Amino acid sequence: MAGAHDAVVLARAQAELRTLITFDKDFGELAFKVGLPAECGIVLFRLRLPSPEAAAVRVSAVLAGRSDWPGHFSVVEETRTRMRPLP
Image 1: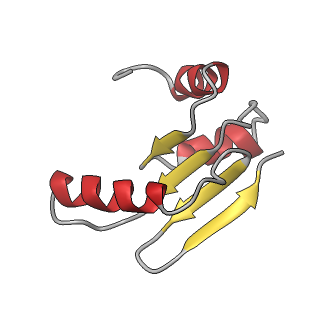
Image 2: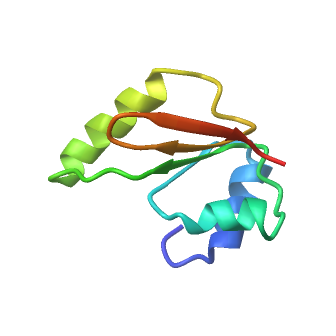
């Protein structure tokens, strides 16, 4: 959904029951400050990786490592993953 507004992307993920995977921290604001529905789950990656290929490998490994993404706003960093229940 390149070029789509963040709220539209989040609404589509919610409607399709898909966990939203992003490198854009604005989605946390939409869920917590604006109050848009996000029970689908949001996973924010905050990583410094040398290439898109390295990012794809890391993202795939992290996502495969657990199944409790829905219902949470998760922040994946280099050495840890923080999860907070969504409102």
